Length: 187
Image (cartoon, rainbow, N blue to C red; front, side, top):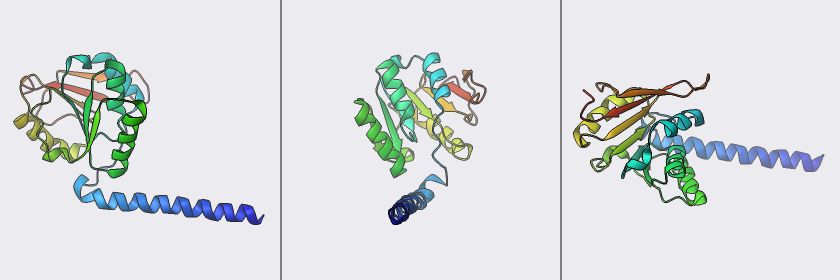
C-alpha cells in the first residue's frame, strides 16, 4: 500500500511539473502568438492535400507556424521535397525538430517568428492559422510573394484573396476546407 501511495505521489508531482512547465511556455509565448493555440492539421486533411497537390514541383515550401511538423513530414515522405517550417512555441518546435531527426528527413524547422522572415523566395506557402492573423498575413504575402506562388490555408480563407480551389477531406468529421490560392490571380 505504501509503495502504491508513493508511486501516486511521484506520478502526481511529475504530472503537475509537466503542466506547470507547459503553462509557463504558453505564458511566455502568448504575447507573440496573440493567444493562438497549437492545433495540428488532422491526418485526413493532410491525406487529401497530399493527394490533390503535387508538391514535387515546388523548390521552396514554407510552413508558417508548423506546430508538430505533420505537414512537413507528410510532404517529404510523400514527395521527397523538403520544407522549411517556422515555429515560435518552444514545445511545438521541439516536437517538430525531433520528428525531423527521428524520421531522417532533410527538411528543417526554425525557432523563429515568420512575421520577421522574408518569404519572397518561397514558391509554396502552407499555413493553418486562425482568422485573427490572416488579414495581416494576406498583406504580408501580397507584398512579398512572386506571382505564381501557391498559398494553401487550412480551415480559414485569406481575406481579400480569391481561391483557385477548395479541397475537402472525404471524412465526416474532418470536412473542413483547405483553400488553395495562386499569387497573381488571387484578386
